[in-house]
Image (cartoon, helix red, strand yellow):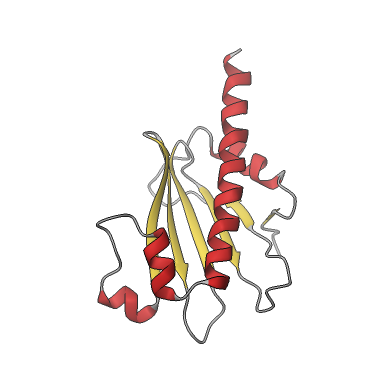
Length: 145
């Protein structure tokens, strides 16, 4: 029973993360830097002048007291927009990256991997979360070269 409940929770969290990534990607394509920051910054934790000059936005997405994600988005004027999202707590080690295609008609292809930061332990749900995210159409896992 517990295993089924855990799998269901992870699948629900993966679906929510999938929707969040699509929302963020749309924001990178359709909003100015200031509009993006206004929509996605955590209240009271807006970018400082250095981040603004680099056109970087950092924010946290909290799923529960024991599961959160730290996100970084770049909207550099002369570069390809991207998002990097790192799991914490139960999902520590989940790493999601998205490069927004230059052509808005091309679909983005989120990449998910399991990358545990040094001196940290992998979250107990991280591997299952990576598998659940890979099950979302269009998502893929990093392929070793």
